[in-house]
Image (cartoon, rainbow over all chains, first blue to last red; front, top):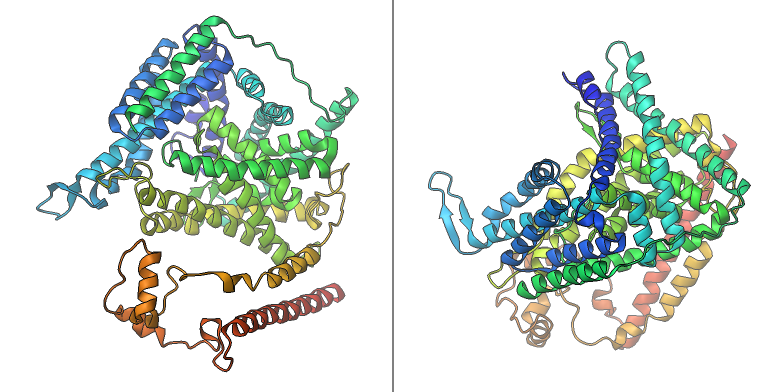
Length: 280
Length: 360
């Protein structure tokens, strides 16, 4: 990824930006595998407990109507991340700063335009900051930070295949789970293919392409990828049929809950319930 | 347009999950019926394709770049149901694996982009490309317009979902608890970016892909190819028309017309300047508005614009008929007759257009 970034460091073209995006996507998946292999609190739990527990906390963060309740859940989320061998700096880099910038930008005007008791008025600009506006922006940012921290912790500490197994155990149809598995599998293949197509196009480029030519080139690349996807789906289907596939999907279940899993699940649910009850 | 967790209230999320669940169930059934055992590999690979296309940086006029959804071409080639499934899967992986879009808002994101996006793209494409020759440039235009319209409809839905939050979900002091901007702010804020950049990005990628496919494998987009069980890529199959069910639905609605007569009270927000001056109508407006009195004076803007156009059948009651019941029925029949006549004229023009294109 560093090499890819180096290539386009000066002023990345749209091709460079796309290649960087693919490289970043591919490396993100590897980083997730690295965290998932570490030993930690979430990693030691049954995937179903992780999924249901974290989901319960995310729902609680969304349902909680008081800033104090959301703030308490944010602390719980950060604590879970720390216990799961995630360092706060990587969490800040990955989640907190990005969310703060994105949601902060969205929430900022609310501070000025939400009607209500005025906290401060700028004499020079004549604009006022209202108390409901500040509260609204604060609760939105904190809620999004909490939900994003929880989701990132779950995703980083759980291999994709375990998330899928947990989803299947929670009665998601086998076809959907299989499709998610296969999508994940071919996603990286197509990402790699698209990246190579853009790299080869960039390496052959001499001079500067005009705007219409650039758009035509992206359209053609997407079209070629589309044709490749069509062929790939046909090949995958034929290989499935040749291995005896008749349309029915069977998945293996290996998960078994231990008493510790039950206790932690209860703790997750109780925390979520208390937060919602406090913040009702 | 990927709504993160925390921007929508739990009840909005639950409602949109319910809408999406109904869409997914129906889409899975119809896709399995159409593609049989090919469903799983086909949808999976297309979901992966949609995901990858969303990562493309698309050069736009003015030197900037944007991202597209890729929903239009999926809807054109696979049909709206299969496209809705494929794009939903791509969105689910984005949310679960890459944290792009929330888990609680996944239903909303899938409803806006995968389900509504697919159907709008498919409908607009069919409307414009209907009857076009396989090599016709109209197909490229149709794909571009379909992409542009579908993205903007998705954005509008997202803006509405954001915009209703402060009205319904606020604390005692009036501070919004979720997305903080009302509709009058959320809609323009969302639409400006989509009408200018994001819509263009989808139009560019859709037109580019359709243009490429027309030259390389035009059978893929000649007819929506989502109705045959063991369809090899490119096999052309026609599907049953929707004209007859539509006419049945119109007939059924026509039979239901008298139900309107049973409705009591006033239609909220449809008041005329005359209603605001009439004591009985004012009482009804007050009841319908939760006992809020309407303004004492008729708003000057309303009074000024009210005289711009006088309807031939005001209040569904032509002046020359004494009985309101009969007047209502006649108004309904007249309106349906007008719609039927307009549709027949449009269909006749469309047929002539297709014939002329086929002969040239």
